[in-house]
Image (cartoon, rainbow, N blue to C red):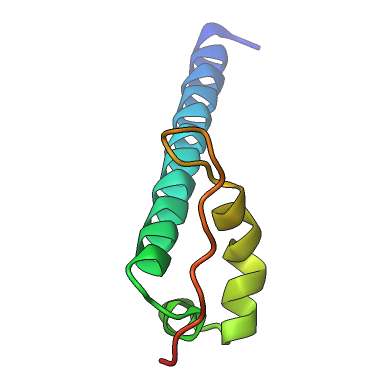
Length: 85
């Protein structure tokens, strides 16, 4: 492999690494947004609508991650009760 090919490969791998970091940050923002929406009273049905999911689909995708989040004091977040859409 010549220098040009190695440089191209390294550039591609750097781009891949940056893309991965951006995706992870986007996922963190997404979960924070879902958590904030739930705390503000948004129903799982409404969150599901945004993603083209049913209420159950939204719960399966996000509920565990939202419940595992901790508050700044290190305590688990309280569950937000389901409200009618």
